[in-house]
Length: 159
Image: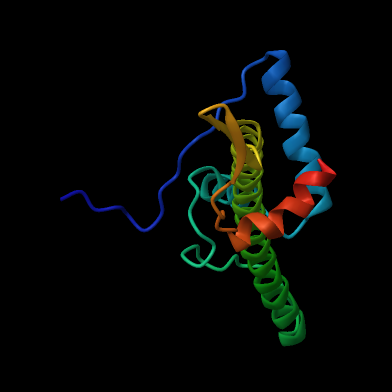
């Protein structure tokens, strides 16, 4: 089995092209704004992010925090960021599920409206029969009223 030495050095080469030069300029400006970070720290952070490693597994960054209060603030900020990520992911999933359910309900209401319209066209309130030249009215058989349909009928009228 291959064993890593205590310190492994890998190199990054920036070629003399527009893309590499602009990337190098971005790296330098980022590191100027955060003097406590090194190029190695930046590379490691980007690798952790691009490999989608959860923050709970990542090692804590070694910063030059001078007081325990600053360390606690940094830890709290990381925890808040993790909570925000989970909250927004959960909210997004819930919103998608609700949109899916609303779409299904609207499709079901449309189908129900078609069924109700077809029934009203097919069935008449009474039928007239002629037997031996005598006409009389036969009342339509009593229809069961579905409570769901009766509640939804008021919404169908709005459509």
